[in-house]
Amino acid sequence: MHHSIQAGFIRFLQRELGISTRAIAIALRHRDHDTQLPIILWQYGFVTIEQLDQIFSWLAMYGHLTNLPQG
Image (cartoon, rainbow, N blue to C red; front, side, top):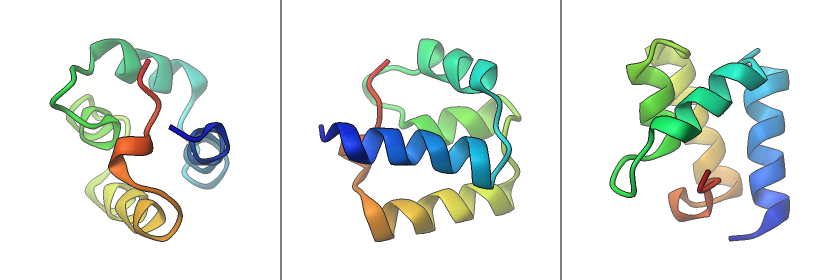
């Protein structure tokens, strides 16, 4: 995992989508090795389906799902 991709992804979630640090921390704690962070954020209601689409677009452009924070 590249630290710069992880940091950029977290910045994107916070700055562009307005996801709180607390929400990200909760999602990280509740994810397992088979479920990606964006899906957990959506399942817990921290992002809308439209925001989820923005997240996947960002990931397609700047990173891969395997580069997400492991928490």
